[in-house]
Image (cartoon, rainbow, N blue to C red; front, top):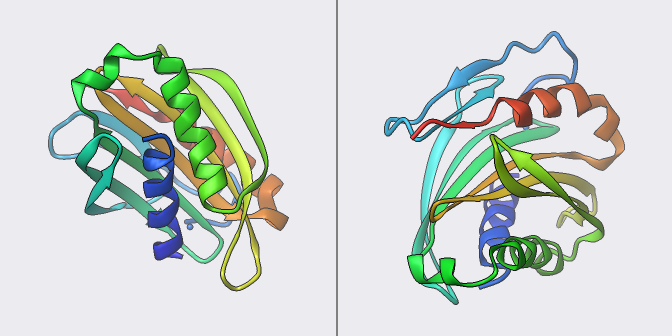
Length: 180
């Protein structure tokens, strides 16, 4: 699953250019990375994975803060993009990130909605994606560009159990705040 999560986060970024049982009994705690750049409530302690990536914008690094278990994963990915990319249509850039995630993973049934994330315009992407084992995952993702950082706040769960995780997913998404 970790490989799949990392793939989804990388694909989401490069497209253009699992904890708890799903009930309200899960306790969320505020997590803030060492640089105090954002905070988000995870239902446990996430692990940091940093990966170099290459795309149309050149070489970049994606930081993934991930907490996963058997049936669900919570992620926050952030990537600093070159400032020259800020000269283009930012709405189109975020839409392209979303579309790339779906097409590059063989995803289906995608839906993109306009949202606000901590006061910033963003996208809410939902889609289904196949796993190598033949299962279907449901991916819910918020994509937001703040200054020159793309944040991807993501929950991945088994498609068959999607409704079961709605409350925890909403807690996770609504808790995200940029603090710097």
